[in-house]
Image (cartoon, rainbow, N blue to C red; front, side, top):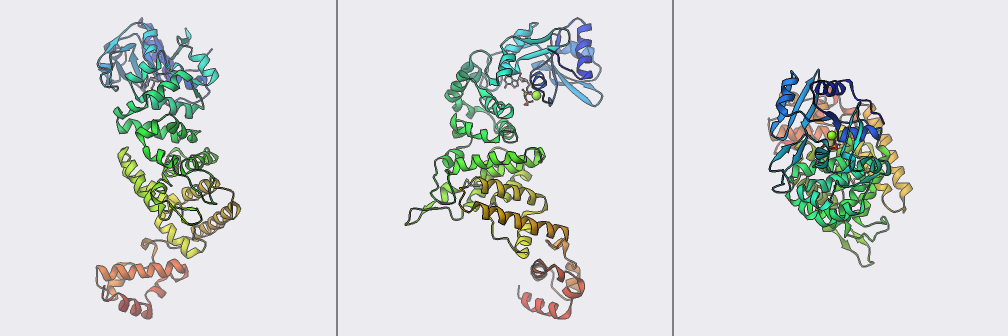
Length: 459
Ligand code: ATP
Ligand code: MG
């Protein structure tokens, strides 16, 4: 079996071999190549110790000398070259206390998490497969290298990595590995929020984001995001729904796959985080009327709060938090079938998020019952048509787009501060209703100015 190694990877491997060492491409890159996927990065494993690697290559960075990793720079590219190593005892389920270097490839492969990640390759030897990784790749199986329980005790993050790989590759988790995940899910508590975030996002932007359901089934969500469990335990007896809140949420993620190839990774990340959180407020907002029908008044606002809390807890950046909050807050806004209303919503959501809002609306609607579904989808279509016209016509949506500014109003005698702000805002409202009025002639006409002055005088 052959892999087409990039030229620079081949070069690093042959230079190390010319110096008398062994060297292989290893881990994720070999796995991805064999699956016909493009690897994110290329890692090299070698019998050479880190100081020798540094001596052999002119341009290097000391990435993790203690752990045996030297980054080798080649032109604009960089490659991690790591010495064969055995991971010592893990102190806290997170870090090996010490690593020992070894000159046996098999020992290095043994420290890796899953059989499909424990494959090595170079052009002379071909594939090195000590743990049945090739057959697991062929059969679509995630299986821990050696005893799964011990492996999860060493590093609990592997519990999430297993589910994440199963979503990315659409693989099944092997039985013993799965039962160990269930048994050890609790130990994910030791893992930092940042590392959990990375895995969660990889799962969500994968081609099978609906596999978020496995987080619930394995007991992982109870530890990292109990809000998911609450959704799973909230029924919605309502003609618009046919699933409980949790399964509905999973279905919205499932529906978002339709846009897999049309969205950037960044957009997918925002959309799917928003879908995950959009109904999280429902358990808190549930009420049941005398006919036994469930209602969830005000849930979008509560979902927004919960989303913000979760994303902060998982150490997401402010820009992400802002975008997800916005989409969650307005996810259920349906009364926007006139241009003035839609313009107001666009002003709140912002240009960049509107395309995601329409996708979110569709994913949400298609995960509800069939009751009035056609009408709902037609509404979204009409709304999108209006939206396109508003964008095409470059209608004024914000104060920035107004043809007059604060200076103009001060010249007309308005007081800077509250009065000025109120007057500009009133003008914006007028123009949101009728963009034809966004002209200096109209907005600075004596009559309107007088009226607005009177209205805002006592602000
Ligand atoms: P991706 O790059 O998509 O995250 P990957 O498998 O390449 O997937 P990396 O984090 O880049 O993952 O790690 C490279 C390799 O290092 C893995 O394929 C695996 O062999 C090993 N590895 C990474 N993290 C762990 C871990 N927590 N426990 C054991 N081995 C690991
Ligand atoms: Mg990788």
